[in-house]
Length: 363
Image (cartoon, rainbow, N blue to C red):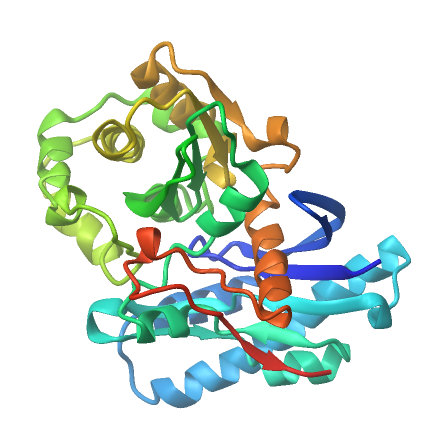
């Protein structure tokens, strides 16, 4: 029995998701999971690093070391609970924490010190999955659609899988085997930033606060004019574009209630997801949600109203819980790397061709 661990820490900066997985044919069995929240100080340091600052190279390397220790704690806690030994694990697939993502300039940066992680866990680590695709003129993201195709593909139904993390990304699995995947725009990122600023809370649980507001149509229109939304795939984005500065420049309206901004940001996320589906994903039969946004009742309800008669479900219905799908995907990506198999999709990233992704750090 070969087991793989996936580690995912995304743009929401809430913490690290770890999943212990076993793969057989087109089936993913999640044996154990663990979530470890980022300490407040670490989250603030990582957020600050997204903008240029003095001595940022040293800061990034030191934070990478801290993340490696945090990832190690998460892995060891999960293995102890599952009563699984490190020598039973074939590899860890570690996404790392994205600090810069500039494929148009030919680079991406995810920190986490994979060599240290391999040393601390005594498990082979596969990381830096995005760089090889970017070297082949791709976006380096999203990478999860290849996993979606392997696990969720159908020959009878056109499926869309929507991960609503800090950024929302869409995978369209056509029943004919074609796959499209791209970032539609902000998911929870701007919502969380506004909740932190106005409520001093990391997020607006279930959209409760936003539900007390109304959509500010002028602000929404202004936001929807962002050129990124009209770009065709392949495309990917992150905090390099959708950050606090972007938010501030779009809400310069006096006497606007904070809860109305919150409700408008929910509408922005839902609208850009729906418009992307409508424009690029023809004849969708089913839509499945995952990621933290799948637990925001207001956001989910807004998307459901836009989709009308198209079924909207969570990926739990397909066998993988909404909180663990991306971590499982990076376990699968590590497996592909060790087996010498390709795991990018040129139809998704725009790369020149199929490539074996990731760098291996043996135990």
